[in-house]
Length: 279
Ligand code: SAM
Image 1 (cartoon, rainbow, N blue to C red):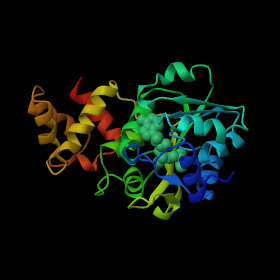
Image 2: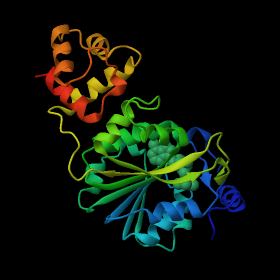
Image 3: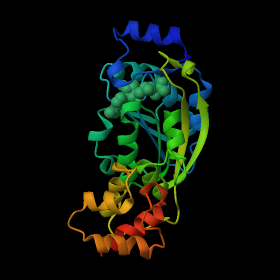
């Protein structure tokens, strides 16, 4: 059955007495090329973890290319649908849960190297990305559909308008590659904006190794919470207990101007700065 098709989607939902759940960000793919290309991007993985399979159009493609697929879907109504649409595959397990509530370490403990693939609701893309990046899971890559503007943000360089806290966190974790531009008309119902599929591949050798990941994240957050301010003032407002002289000395030790703004710093500079501030 061709799942990337508006009439198939309507038929399946009607047959199961379901409606598209806008609140769960349900925009299903209707161009088969897209799941095909996402699945083709999976490399070096024993298991693929799919988040939000919907009616299973990407899941099917993943089952074709990988040994084992685990799909986590929050919408209980879609579980019997997936039972039917994935009925031909014995290498897939579907779990009905909220991915943010699942103990992924326990779930994936004996599943080898794991690639994550997801076409997620836009409102939780960033929280889920951050969750995966900070999880410490042994991932071979994360391939995810994001709004085009988020793709630009994630690939942006220090000093650009798009560069932000998430860019730094992702850059510290891995290399971002754009796989595919996906116009809004590739979804049913069509969202208001275009999307892009990006792949994040973890660095083999870390770009930066802050002594405390928590302090690193805190300093990055502080810098971008007030991005129009000088970095020294932004840090001082977030950490009033750190003497201003210590902040100034740390910025100077990195060879940066005392007036520098946080948006100019690379992830390595943020990492060194947080080490110096919390020394
Ligand atoms: N993968 C399908 C496709 O590409 O057509 C569906 C994508 S749709 C944009 C997002 C899917 O994620 C929906 O099926 C939705 O029910 C599911 N979802 C939303 N929030 C979720 C969560 N917290 N955990 C797991 N699945 C979630």
